[in-house]
Amino acid sequence: GAVVSQHPSRVICKSGTSVKIECRSLDFQATTMFWYRQFPKQSLMLMATSNEGSKATYEQGVEKDKFLINHASLTLSTLTVTSAHPEDSSFYICSARLMGFGGYTFGSGTRLTVV
Amino acid sequence: AQSVTQPDIHITVSEGASLELRCNYSYGATPYLFWYVQSPGQGLQLLLKYFSGDTLVQGIKGFEAEFKRSQSSFNLRKPSVHWSDAAEYFCAVGAGGSQGNLIFGKGTKLSVKP
Image (cartoon, rainbow over all chains, first blue to last red):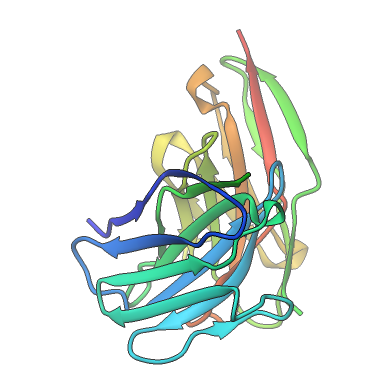
C-alpha cells in the first residue's frame, strides 16, 4: 500500500518550454506532498511543500514562478517547470507524508533533461 | 538546525561480508530517523524507520539499525551483504518531528565485490 505514482519517468524538452510532472497517490489521500530535487551523485534537496487546497511553501532560493506546484486534490500534485533551461536538468522526486507514524513514501522520480 | 551526516561517500564490501553504514544526526528533540535505498535512476525505498521504543530497528532485506542517543547516531547494518544490495543509501531525519519534510544526508554509495 501507500504508493505514489510519478510520471513521466524521463522527459527531454527544449529550452524555453514547460514540463509538467505528476504525482498521484494511488491508494491513500496525500494531504501533504514534498517535492525534492536531486543533482547527480548528490542528496535530495527539498524544493517545496504543498498542502491540498492551499499554496505551496517554497524553500529559500527556489523560484516559485519557475517551479509551479499545484495540489488541487488529495490524490494529485503537479510540478511544472516553466521556461526550462539546461540548468534545470535534474532528477525530481515527490514524496507524500503518511498518516500517523507511517513515515513517507516516494515517487519513482523524473529525469528532466533540457536541451 | 537539523542536519544529517553520512561520513562515508563510498564503501566497497565483498559479497557475504558484514556491512555498517554510518549516520549521525543533529536534532534538538527525539528524532524521527529513516534509512532509504536508491537504485540508479529510481526513487527511494524505505528500509526502516525509528520513531520511539526499541532502539534496535529491524527493516526489510535483512537490514537493521540502532539508535544511539548518546552518540547521535543511527547506523545501518547487515550481517551478510548480497550483490543486489549495491545502491545508494540515504539516512534522513524528519524535520519538525512527524510533521515536516525529511532532511537527507549526502548518501553512501555501496559497491559489492563478487
